[in-house]
Length: 407
Image (cartoon, rainbow, N blue to C red):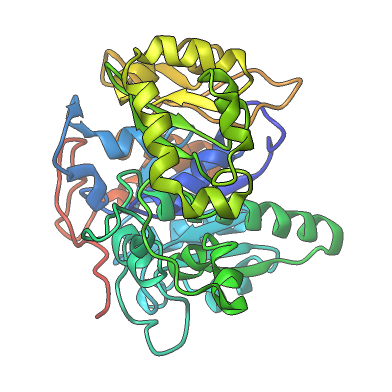
């Protein structure tokens, strides 16, 4: 891999989405990512859903640009191999509940004695301390606890979760930013750092303007569907053959509808008046849109420089001309054969071309890393790769709980 982070080595002991997203971003940018999995692999390798050659769509989606090795950290030889890797690495990232890394002999206090310049990153559900620190968390529960779920869905209906793993993915981005900041400090001051980031904190950070809206007396905001409380017209509208999404569009949309007189109507002359008469204005706009095809609506509204887009399903996104022009759908060869398509990296840096490694299979680079990076001979590699069962699992082997979480 060639990129601005070439020369940075990161040990990835994460599972799920948040941690793997962070390391994938940094791997795309040139860092050497060594993903360390227990025998049998992490749980996301066995998720239900579409697979490619036995590899789950989650594994394929979040593990590009990495090498993969197996270490059974319940054994001393594997733990020593981890310590040897820590000596030559810049970052270690994990996302187990508090207590697990200490039990595996890989907590911050232990590893910083081996490498005082190590950037040690912990992603958790609720943080390293506090009344809920011991609790498990997922994108679903964190987005609920942090208020996001209460804001999604149609008014008066059951609150909804966003289908993409928004909190997990954003946590990964925040973690990557934190790592880059700590690496800069390491370069500047010659010291490492411990970074804590949790799903709950990330969820709260995404509330943004909604927090001061409440604290300044605006009341508790509820789900509004696709509407925005202070913008009318705004949101998703039905057309003759689909749906479109409108951003802020007043007064241009009145002209697009051929209804310039609406801008002079006292009921629609101010933002507050339009919110007060939202149902009537939406009926006018929605009625006009419903008589036309999505394609005609886009053509007419875009001619007025109105923020408008089709509500695309995933199949249309994958084939979209702008999405593909931006190289956001990657076609990668898979080590087990065939090709896979995955979402790309939105970060484009001049002077570097896309150079992505396909998602590795379980343990694909174990021997390469142990021999070439650590200089282990065949006998020592055999010792490290012997698990408690006495043999190395094959690539297709799947079982969970090799690194059990403390409750």
